[in-house]
Length: 105
Image 1 (cartoon, one colour):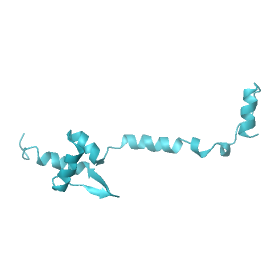
Image 2: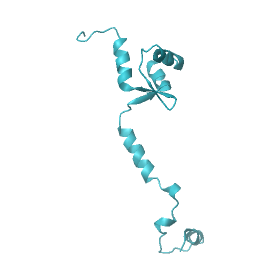
Image 3: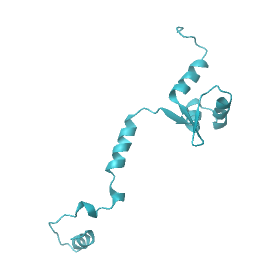
Image 4: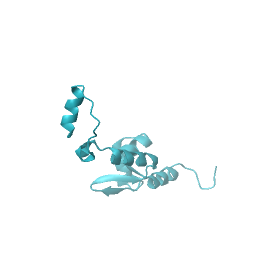
């Protein structure tokens, strides 16, 4: 019995005790892989940010982030022509511009 005939039987009120084979389920409906990947990614800390995300974190414009990168105040890499800034670079920038010295509270 295929999926269409089972659906027609259910719509007609006929209950059959047969199940649809797994191969009949289209791959687009298989969400187990993407759901697991999203769950795993949600548990990982974010290590790389886009220029827009950094601008939001620093509460400045995107243009300011690009200027900081151009002036070598904020280290970034260009992955496939897109700016990516690591969490470490952002932390170093924040520490170097905070005016605090190491060991001073």
